[in-house]
Length: 353
Image (cartoon, rainbow, N blue to C red; front, side, top):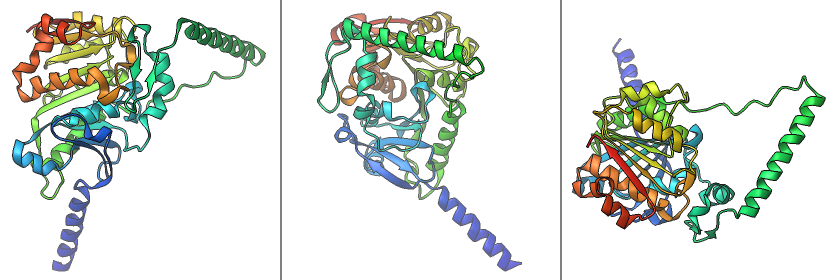
């Protein structure tokens, strides 16, 4: 009997050990960002479905500065890959945040993947874009955009002709979403466990009273799907809004469950999320503080620019204010003159402050 108990105890100890955070892969993006705590991107063996963006030398920093606030992040298009936001998340982490993003660790070069998307997605008002690798890219000219539209129209026409020839041919199914809103809470649970587990890389490193949920585009719908959770203290909606849509099980009804300050960062009328975000803003209850900033960057924000561009700067200021209590950072969101001085082309609205 004693032998059986001993073996059981060993098995239990082994399972606990396996549950501890274990860095399996690591890389540094853009020299670790511009913040005071150089960041790193981590793939963890005990949490393979997620990527963690955190300051380097985490325990040393916590010993000097105290525990760090947490961000859980959901991707645009609800992809199971966070490479599109790698520059922004790395930059935010360098200011003293631990961000867990949906999607496994990926060594992919974000610039190589998104160069073509960038040229097509940025509006004409954006002008020249300097990517993180120093490459300069101009948005499509009117002639290029017209040629693209003509090519797309030709492709649609050819597809319709082909479908008529074979009426039995089924329309190709769109890619199924491989992520879901609850994943944000699942990774938050993992972080809570790691913070409480002696020997974990995150043991007593996280300030779990200060948690933000953040998502871009479809990822914003996932944020709204879990925003009711009392552990979440603020939400950041990037190029996102639910409007009258239903996405990821989320509808405008979820706006009634909000209980924390909300920040919408939208790319102006050229952003496909613009109209939905305006509806959200009007529908959010009068007891929920909400700020909406609009730039002229379209749906792609400034995510491919060095260190995530101006969107990263705005996100850091919001999180510093909401999660670290740095009241001075609130000027961008509450002072129209300050907003005009820092970002002349941006417009901002707010309510319930």
